[in-house]
Image (cartoon, rainbow, N blue to C red; front, top):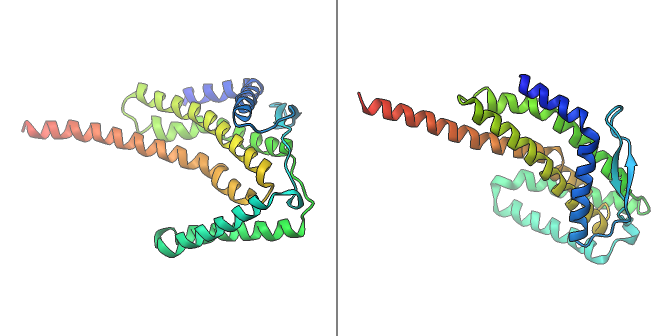
Length: 230
């Protein structure tokens, strides 16, 4: 518990430099991907834990979106229909994603001049991720340290998850900004569902499953060796 509390305090104390580093890495990836960015502007995050910074990437309205982006939306719906028909295991998920895309298309048609600024998206993203980073030490304590018989290994898993969560956030953020730049808000509901907080939960559970698998394998291996000597 002490380690988690220390990590929480350090994250809160260095929240502004951490968000600045997040923006710096994202800016590098945006340049590598060829996505135009006019700079970064300060954005409010949480009182006492700000400012962060949001990018100034052009995001088109629906009336400005290319025909290719609209065609990609249709292809996405067709692909999901095929998946829903052929794979019963993914049918409910595919149907749900189809609904998200259809709702997005209808809303964009009726509000074709609405524009989401990339700076605002960056603000929303930082508020979500900073909250995740601050809570993750305590969640990791329950998932990786308490069930782990080896204290050092448990602390290692906690540190790994924290670092991975940061860089995974940068990658998802850059991908979302790129999609917004090329397709506007057509895929926004799908992006937020797939790459928002759900992604943080899934990667955390992924590392947890690996940790449990390795730990149980070691424990059962010791037990098997002990039984073989009887």
